[in-house]
Image (cartoon, rainbow, N blue to C red):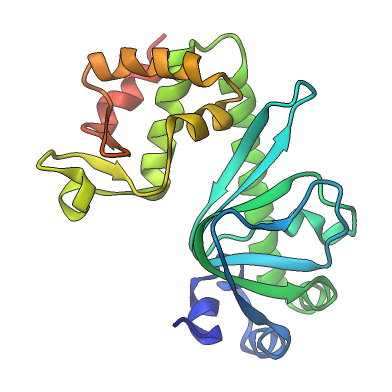
Length: 237
């Protein structure tokens, strides 16, 4: 079972922290086991804890006005989930654990105090938030009507294969094929939630990619035979 020291080694926002700040945060941190399907926080909820995934995966999502669920981000090992709430505002999204794991917890008050005392730690937190902003910009582009549905799916699967991909040969569900397996519990329904689209629409558009040999979906796993070919597909006008 993972301990605090091992969890600290995984946390990306702690990479730039000084030894004194690491010691201070270790004195207030806790490591919590979480189950898939549970929530760490809900939209509009008052949150006083910074969460970092030490093991497993979690997703940030919102419901649209029409009641459809839209997954905004999926985070894995070492990634922080809610540093944007350090300002003290209520949560603007919900956070659902999608795979059993461990989450590292810090009181916000101790995190903000550490940021004031350590530029390296403060810079790591800011870098994490900056990366989220840049990803949102890209999502806004991909969500526009300028990109066809099949290309939106291709772009999303390419990114997931970059963030959560493992060689197919290393995955029991990868069969005898080459390429990259997206190593997460990703169904067509959940992919539709990520894209803010209907399952039936995504299933139909996904068939375009499978017919072209750019994506394989078998045994409940998405396999990308050639990531470069998939990237070229969604980037080509």
